[in-house]
Length: 317
Ligand SMILES: [Zn+2]
Ligand SMILES: [Zn+2]
Image (cartoon, rainbow, N blue to C red; front, side, top):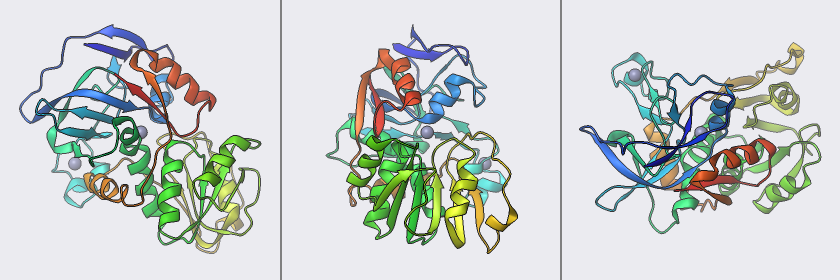
């Protein structure tokens, strides 16, 4: 099969011909129809998060077809032990022996993949492959982050990419007011956010028209944490939704005072996946995608790094 592999972080992804994967008992062999690109793929490519298995096939937002024709989604959570303290208490996202798709397990930047059937998600019918793929990380980990924002009526989204463009639609559907924060001066993305229902959009250096009850930070810039904290109403929460972030600068305790809190969100549980994939068609979440042939994976990552497109990049095998 044709695949795109990461041999060494910091270097370009390389096309490779690999042996077709053979499913072990309990695994599904899937023909990859579409695989969305996530900022985590870029962090792995750039060496900002650790890639313990090299070479590795990146990609953890896979829409694949099994030999019987059924369509499955393969998300980031690829394996858990089911026995550790976290698994036993409904927090398999924190499993101490978790294996992640496209990092510990070869992922979807390939024509074929194998995945543990217990972690594959059934997908809604009637939506094209490339429209569904972004739901599988940006959507469902974004949705987990939205849950951590509690019942916040006024929600700030910092970094308006793959996750935020979906979660904005969900939040508006739930009756929340969304304020979208982009890179200063990024008018195109601000207009995109407003087209998806954001009540206000501006630069991350601007103050929203009123205080916010929660902020979700999807961007990987640590200085956004104290910036968001400054805009929070008392009792509000800043949720950091990314796997990697640059250092968070010091800030006055006064900004945290009045029961404001800062927390992170890590990975997903299968329940998150089932819940979000059931909700998405009801909203409905409509994804904005830019498609690339599999061979142009490196270009897709470069365009993500540069902020060259709105929404999500999706590779088509
Ligand atoms: Zn991801
Ligand atoms: Zn576990």
